[in-house]
Image (tube, helix red, strand yellow):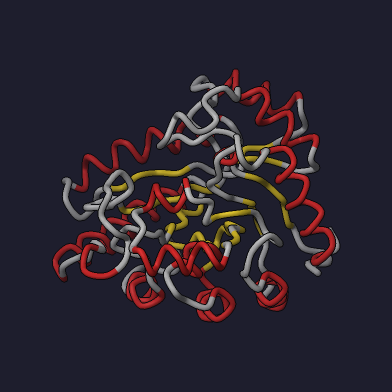
Amino acid sequence: MFENREILLGIAPIGWTNDDMPQLGGENTFEQCVSEAALAGFQGTEVGGKYPTDPKVLKRAMDLRGLKIASQWFSSYLCEKPYEDNEREFVKQLDFLEAVGANRINVCELTRCLFASKESMFGAAKPVATDSEWEKLSSGLDKLGRIAHQRGFKLCFHHHMATVVQTVTETRRLMETTDPRFVYLCFDTGHFTFAGEDAAQACKEFVSRIGHVHLKDIRKNKMEQARREGFYFRRAVLENCFTVPGDGCVDFPAVFKILDKHGYEGWLLVEAEQDPAISNPFEYALKARRYIRSVVGI
């Protein structure tokens, strides 16, 4: 697959250390993370909370290991804060990413998100945007996306559990109300699956807008328990709902086939929020790399 296509394989540092729950992998260092990512056969990583904040220091550490920076998460609050506040922080992050050689930025809208809450991600507690908030979100993303485009970046919006853009319906609305020249999708197999969606069907629907891919798998039995018991987001992490590709129920061969057929180019990035004390990050990085090689041939 992906013959004569520019495809880069990466892995997120969240398997080594969790930025939202520092007790998970708190003992693991930045150096361990990037060294093991390189040793496992990956070409790059996203930026994690333990990464050097000086772009020169970070780039040197990555260059030593033959790695690239793929992208970085950006928390937007376009629904609740003035656009100018969002733009100021966005430009700062673009400056950093440009200095380390990246060309993707993953934006997630965190207005009323439940990441730190003990409320369920499912049912009535799930955050929902009003029509006026949707207008602010879409218009704000278009503006940020134009800035990113002018600087050689793709703004890739990250649909995410426990946020106002979680489902296929919500993602569709976002794609339909934003400019395809400036706003792309950070397509996440795991988050769509956890939301009760068919990841392959979602990939097929949105493939023309996909600018970045997160390869996250889901343990089906844990997902069913999460829905039945109404897990909050961090409980889903602690209960090992998420895992690397090939270790869960996501139909990755179908997803890869769709991406290949439609000429996708860019990063395929493994991401799995796990407790490294239970799921050894290097072992799971190797498992993911071997699985991708067996399915895709790269």
